[in-house]
Length: 177
Image 1 (cartoon, rainbow, N blue to C red):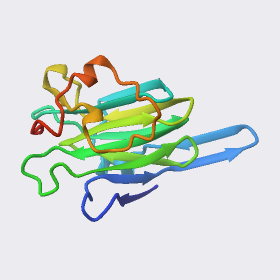
Image 2 (cartoon, one colour):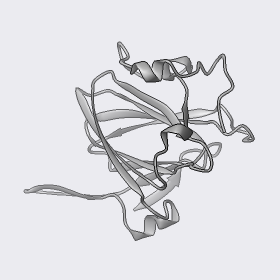
Image 3 (cartoon, rainbow, N blue to C red):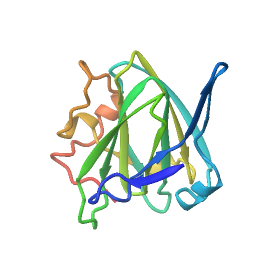
Image 4 (cartoon, rainbow, N blue to C red):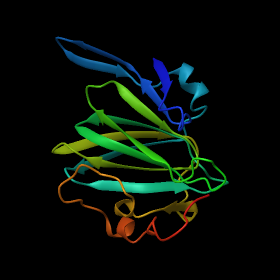
């Protein structure tokens, strides 16, 4: 496994290149092991989403004291994974980035506490695996309308849940932790 910073500016975001083996039987991937404890010291919940093309999910995070660290892996299809710094006290508040993830690139991304997270689906469908520390608490979740950010989600006609489209507009509201 190799771990590197996303960029100098957003160096808390980590890109994980995991082990992926292919032979005549198919493939086998090792996306988390004990050395990852430096990144995510405990896994409390694992989620799996299945989304169709043009879906935009997110942008969400949890407020203290229930903040979460997530490792996100696309195990089928292709997505654009999106993250934004929503920590009011951070010098990079409002800065965002993205990384294309797919079933063959052997990459995962670590999203630390204080960063909003979402993704868009580029392929016909995509299956995404999330591992996170902490427990989801819906009354401590916050988010922003994903279409209110000046970001190209690379989808023709975005499909956004009613819940996500009713989240605050990032250009009009100061949202964060």
